Length: 214
Image (tube, rainbow, N blue to C red; front, side, top):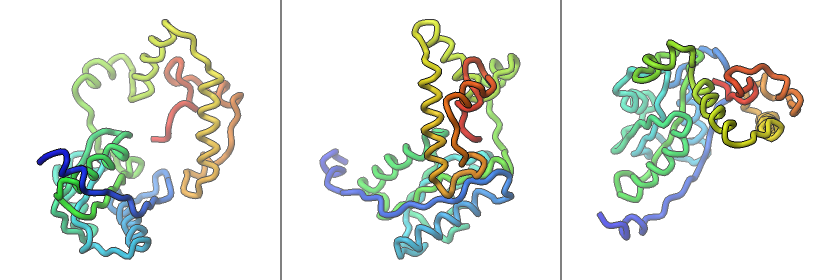
């Protein structure tokens, strides 16, 4: 299939939906996905029978499920001609937009629903292997903050790091959360650069207010 053929098919995003961010809500990834799907159907006038493509981000709650997209499609009443689950972590949402667009341009489907549903504070079935278990865990590196702490240490050895600048980023992100009705309620309170600088260090030089909510 030539690139020219792919370029001839326009792609549009026609609706967006989201749930409120909660911690330990007891809701499953399927329930959260269903809430978003219902909002999308309401906004677009589409029905489950109109969706012939399904794109999912890898779910920590459903990590061992090798048929995650099939189970999700069945739960939502969708019968897709094309489906895919991506494992790009926090980048899955934007990566899936690109992949879904390619599927549409290639004619694999006509209408794709993209879902980034997960409920790790309800149930977390993740089991990281490879270098994490061998090299990270024995020395106490737990997750992304530990890894980014090492990267930032290397950066600081070569360049100056403006912590007030990092604080300004955290303040701006919190300002955005304060304006979002769906944001986690605890994070809808404004912070200052001083709040950032006084927050505890979790992985030198990363502070608590550098981290995103799991």
